[in-house]
Image 1: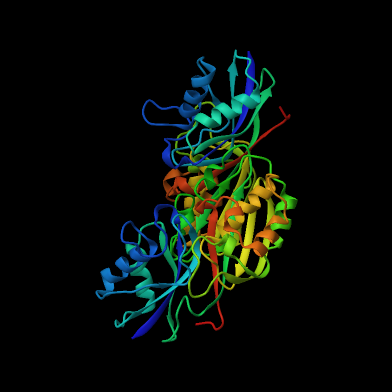
Image 2: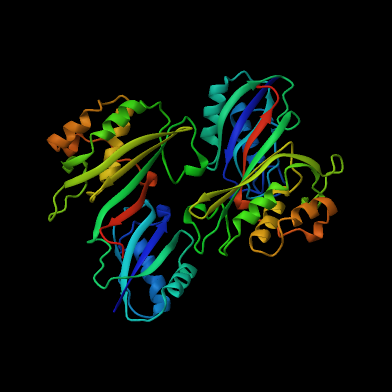
Length: 249
Length: 249
């Protein structure tokens, strides 16, 4: 069997998330359906990150095995020809036989966009969290900084993994003031607990609104109290931007 | 009568252009309808630039007169509350009584986005011209440069204005390679003839594809032959980004 690695971009607005569900359209099901159509064999997609409903991806990595000999350039052209306009593959290549998009990933990067103005940005209405109230950006940047390092993210986790628990290592967490009403939070970690970024952003926005101190993020990492966390920020502001692997495959 | 000046952003995808039409929804008609709803008087919007169907605006400038005394902050909040999600006002302010958004404009700036990759960019599918073939970016940049200066743009004009003819002054025209498959053309002129930017881009893309020489742009400016011009580029790649006025009003 050949092992094929793809880099995928998707606008998550119309999907029930990445992972296949009993009901509703997902990115995984669209990919499998499109590949099966021209490979004419059952396809099982493995994704590096299971993004939630409404979350976007600039560079999700997935892989699948195939018994067919079709060249990767033709797989790419056929796949993009069949996929809907909101899911496309930017790269399709041969991978090592044992490459596993999720298990082999050593780091994931996400970006979260906040549009902070008294009017909505028409071009970001599906791609940012609109916060009309004035935000204390300095306090928010301080709060985001506390996320860096190895912590138990139980307070910021919707559904705890029975196997891995909630301890994760955040390599970097930075809030950048992009000017012109736009704030971006960049977070890179070995992996993320369920809804971790959106829980963090919700809490950080409450810091920006003056409803809590920047240090309350630190307290939540210590007391791991999910009930004291901020409201989960909307999915539409979140973008999966990069998956890292130890080796290039 | 008070004269109110607004800066408007819109995603043009769903509209039959800026200017009111007998049929179909336009940005002007949406603005007038929304303002009339809470000002409870007939409103006539004057726009700086009559963008075509599908063209976007980051900062269109418009004005209207009103007999009502409602403060501008309340006009802004009420208007944005009623407008659809793809049209919003970023600024609303009092203008000089004789301010006229179109007549007083001294320069207009447009940006045109070309996505040049063998796959579509899912996030720019309504906001860029997708050209999958390899483009000669150096030749395109040279071609764009010929546009600068005062010329008769008859070859690049769909419908000639009986009053003003086709002579316009382009203050600057630059193609920037933004990396990662994105090309942007920035054009600033005193004003533009109908479909001028899209006609230029269509011709410049043919230069990029090797179908004509960069110098053919110069020839078209000299021979003013509309039949030799390139195919008009799609509206979705075009953004009105700035209107300039002599005085700040």
